[in-house]
Image 1 (tube, one colour):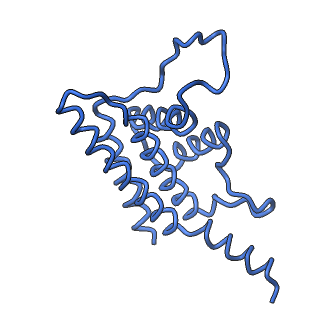
Image 2 (cartoon, one colour; image 1 turned 120 degrees about the horizontal axis):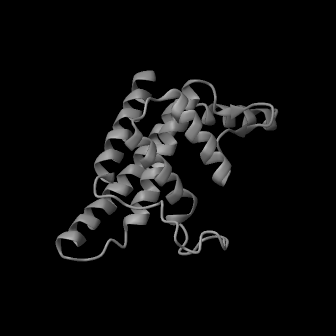
Length: 170
């Protein structure tokens, strides 16, 4: 048996499987929803929003998996020449994914802003407590990544739209 070929074929099938991306998105969104329940409970009790960055990170990753599922449906997720997924690698991968999303899924300006902010949580805000590098031009004043009270509702609507698209395509 040619194991390298078997493993390569298995990798290709996994990357190109919209259901795989859907299932992972569902798992991530479920975890985000559980955290949201705690955030809402803390808010009612007058507590802080210490879990919002984790909620936004998991929600962003769930939406990212949905979008990769859409790309898989269109056969645009795998670079066969390099055996590498498209849209990977910190900022450049998220920028490419954002452009793909804008070209293939209609988004309102609010949804575009939300996706941009979620990308910020995926790249940094949801993982680190400090910037990865010091930028004198920024001086800590740039705060374009934030949590809005409407974010959970908008995330849920975007997630529903993307998962319905995935499910219709299966």
